[in-house]
Image (cartoon, rainbow, N blue to C red; front, side, top):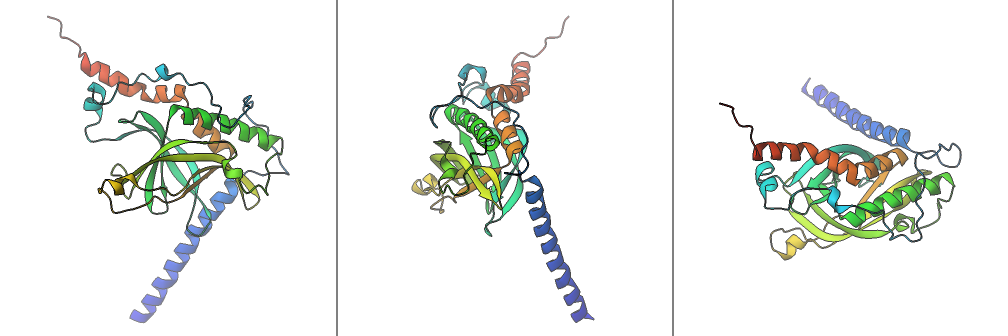
Amino acid sequence: MKKMLMIVTGVCAVSLSLLVSCSSAKAAEESADQYGTVVTPAQKQPADISGTEKTVPVQKDQISVPQQGNAFTRFFTGNMKDLELNTVKLFQLTVANKLQQEDATIIYNIKSEKTGFSAWYQTNWYHLLFTDSTRGSLASAEQLYLSDFEQKKLDRKNSKSYKIYGELPVTIRWGTIPGMESGYADTYVQFGYEFKKGSPYFSITVWQTKNQAYDDRSSEVQNSSTLHFYMNRAQVTQMSDLLSDAKITEALAPYMKNMQENANPAKDSY
């Protein structure tokens, strides 16, 4: 009886593993954009860009978040490093070289005043924090990608397509537990596209780089992992929109309001 129970348990475990794998593969297949046969009109007009480094104008004063170390930091954060603003979907490249859809969180890093996203990648939580210029370039890259898709300019044979829309500065932080990152590095992110199983995806690539915390002797991990994130058209459009100045300001508004209310509490009339 005990032997029979062990056999049944093993079969169930294998079945569950296959079910999870199939569900992940099905989600990736259903989310793939059809290319070359069915074309859906893009929702945005492409930007007029003469080079990959040109960015969408960003108005710094739109994001009126106080500098680090002031009342904003002290009141809201305590030990908190990031404010979670929104959620999106994207794909990561698994160790088996397959696409797996994951949730990602749009975050605002309080200390650096940079906005980006965090997502689980294979063995760690990775945070990608963009400068204003990088966020602007992401918006430009998204529009170029949509335009190239509609005009059927995406080239399956281009081995360097993953960086065709530019290379910009990025700060990465990572760790096994969200909010407790043990590694960090200032490096570069590349925007482009890649084909997976016949379908094109907008790609975000960050190559392996040296962990600056290793130099500080605060971490035993010497390097980061190479990151490959992918998005279909709907996902990259949403990501670009949520990382715009207007959406960031909107998402931070409740925090600003609470800070102002606590800085100027209502007085009792007598």
